[in-house]
Amino acid sequence: MKSITITILETSDIHGNIFPINYGSNDKAELGLGKIATVIKQERRRNRNTIVIDNGDLIQGTPLTYHYVRSNSHKPNPMIALLNDLHYDAAVVGNHEFNYGMDVLQKAINESNFPWLSANILNEKGEPFIGKPYLLIELEDGVKAAILGVTTHYIPNWENPEHIKGLTFDDALESTKKWVEKIRTEENPDIMIVSYHGGFEADLETGEPTEKLTGENQGYRICTEIEGIDLLLTGHQHRSLSGKVNGVPIVQPSFNGQAIGKATITLMRNEDMWTITESKPELIFVNEIEADEASLQLVKEYEYETQEWLDKPIGQVIGNMTIDDPLKARLKDNALVEFINKVQMEVAKVSISNTALFNNVTKGFPSNITMRDVVSNYIYPNTLTVIRISGKDLKEALERSASYFILENGEVTVNPSFTTPKPQHYNYDMWEGIDYIFDLTKPIGERVVRLSFKGNPVRPDGEYDVVMNNYRAGGGGEYVMFKDKPIIKDIPLDMSELIANYILERGTIEATVNNNWKVIW
Image (tube, rainbow, N blue to C red):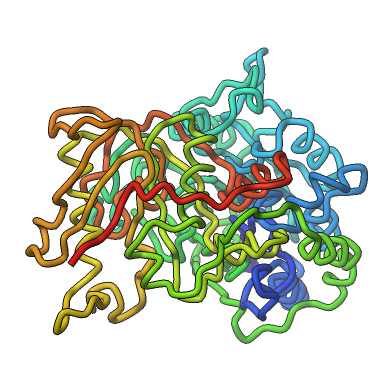
C-alpha cells in the first residue's frame, strides 16, 4: 500500500510583525514573520508536500504597516512581498484586513501571488467579494487538498461602515456547512481543510460556553456540527491551541508571529482511494529560532524608513505630561491619563472613559512627542469598545479599582493581589467624565465616597455609555460587571494609532488636569 504525508502550516494574526523587535524600545522580541520564515523554509525542505496558509489579520498592527499605509502605499505591501517570497499557497481575509479601508486591502490582494479566500463575505451580487471561496491543490501522486476560507461574520460590529460598504457577512457556520458539502460533492478532495478566521466559543473538551454566544467565534460548532472536515485552522482569539475537537484536528498559532501551526496528515492508498490514517496537530514556537536573514533583507527598506519615522517628532506638548512616580500618578489625576481618556472620548463620541497606566516603567510624553513615545506608553494592541452600563456597574467597577491600594502603617502601597504572582497594574483604572473620590480608610468594597456625573449623583439604575479598551469591556481584570453588557460601538483601530492620529491632526496638545478624581486616606 502506498502512503503519503502532507504538512500543512498556518500563520494567523501576524498583525504586521516581521522583525523580532518591540517597536516601543527596539528591544529583542521572540516573534515575527522573519522567524516564522525560517520554520517555513525548514519544513519545505523536510517535505515537498507542504501547504502554507495565512489565516488573516496580516496587514495591520505595527508601526511598520501603519507607516507603510500613511507614506509608502505606492510601493508593494511589505507583508505581501514576504508571503510571495515564501510561496504561500493561500490567505484568508481577517477582520483587521479592513482597518485601512478597501483600497489598501484590494491593493494587497492584487499584489499577491496566491489567492485570498473568503466564502462568506459577499459583494452586492451575492458572490464572494474577492471571487475565490476555496482552492484546490494537487500534491504528489494526485492527492487533492481543498482549502475553504471563511471569516468571522461579526465584522460589522467593529468596522468603520465605509470600509465594508456594499459587503454582506453571511453566518460563518452556515457558509462552512454549505461549502464543505458542495466541495465534497463536486470536487471529491482527499483532504478537506477549513481555514477560519475565528476562534472557539466553548471549552474544547466539555463544550461548555466560554463566552457570550454572539456568533463571533464558532469553531466548536464547526467541529461538532459539520461532517467532512479533516483539519480546522483557526485564529482571531490570539490563543495557542492544538488538539482535536470531535475528532477534528485543530490549531490556533498565538499572535504576532510567536508560533506557527503545523498539522501532519498521513494518507494511505487502497485501490483508487486515499484514506487519512493519522493526523497530528501541533504548534512550533519561535523562541529559539533565528530570523531568516533573506526575508528580513527583502523588507529592510520599509523597516529603515519606519525606524526613522518612529524617531521623528509628531507633535508637541504644552505643559508636563511625564510620569515620574507611577504610584503618585495613580493617587491623583494626571495629565497623561487625562489625555488618553480625552482621545478615547473624542474617538468614541461619548462622555465617560477609563484607562490605566499599564506598568511602572511608563514615562509619559516629553515636550517633543515621537511615534516611538506613543507605542512605548501605550504598549498593548487594544482597540476600543463602548458599552452601556448601569450606575450600579459603574460603582462596582470603581470599587474594584479602589482595591488596588492598601494602607500599611498609614502609608499607601499596592495590594499584593495586583502584583503577585505577576504585576497587574493595568487592572487599576482611572476615569474621565465622572467625579469620584476613593477613601482608603474605608473597607475594600466601600471606598467610593463620592460619585457624580455632570453634577448629579450617579443613580444605581441609571444608564451610562462608557468607552474602554476591548480587554476591559470583556470583563478582563476581574471587572465582571462589564461582561456581556450591550455593545454600543466598536472602534477597531489600535489605540496607538488613534493616539498618533489625534496628535498628528492637532500638532500641539496641552497637558491638562481637571482633578475630577482623587484618593484620600
